[in-house]
Amino acid sequence: MSSIVLFGPPGAGKGTQAERITQQTGLPQISTGDMLRAAVKAGTETGILAKTYMDAGQLVPDEVIIDLIKERITHPDAKNGVMFDGFPRTIPQAEALADITAVTHVIAIEVPDERIVERICGRYSCAGCGNVFHDIFNPLGPDGCGCDRFVEKRRADDNEDTVLSRLGAYHDQTSPLADWYESAGIFHRINGDRAIDDITADILSALQ
Ligand code: ADP
Ligand code: ADP
Image (cartoon, rainbow, N blue to C red; front, side, top):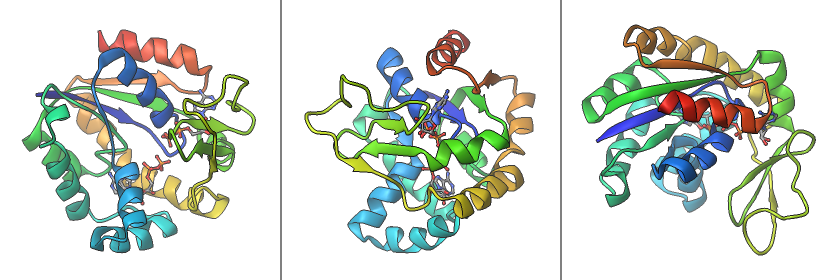
């Protein structure tokens, strides 16, 4: 089993691109953020613990994340490889991942900090199908969302204060991973401050 990592700050477009890359490659998307939000909604012990960190814009402890991933990759759909979205986010997570699966490509979607707040504060999704939109940059079009009935959902942590904390956590704890993966020769930088389709095309060519 070998895998791909989508890497980048909050709001870089990881989820938006993951959905498209999944369609092209057939690799399932594993988003630790989505898994944590599901745990919060279900009121599990993990969810209750994670919520405090998520609301504050801080990273959830590594042990919690690594346990979630170890369980998730035992599912049958992961046997031919997966695409991680938002994982790993720390050096210990990357070390744990190296013991679990060979990473062949790390796709870094680069977006300047000054763009991040506007991206995050305009984000919404459909509660039914999960497709992600933006008030200005990527609004729900006349074709709808991907399911029968669009129901707008906004994340509690998508506000200006929390975004600044999340961005701080990204620079302090996550961005050092770039050197780690760059020295392994598997790090691909993609300019994420462009049209969504152009970014998808560049990611697909990096994966070839
Ligand atoms: P991430 O998963 O990295 O947090 P998302 O894919 O959820 O990021 O994107 C964050 C917000 O920015 C969403 O509202 C999305 O519609 C929008 N977005 C994604 N890609 C682009 C882009 N290339 N240009 C402008 N807005 C974008
Ligand atoms: P975004 O990319 O928009 O920041 P995510 O959905 O990936 O959002 O993550 C939301 C929150 O979930 C993060 O702010 C953090 O609290 C937690 N989280 C998600 N993935 C991880 C991870 N790999 N390690 C630690 N915390 C995580």
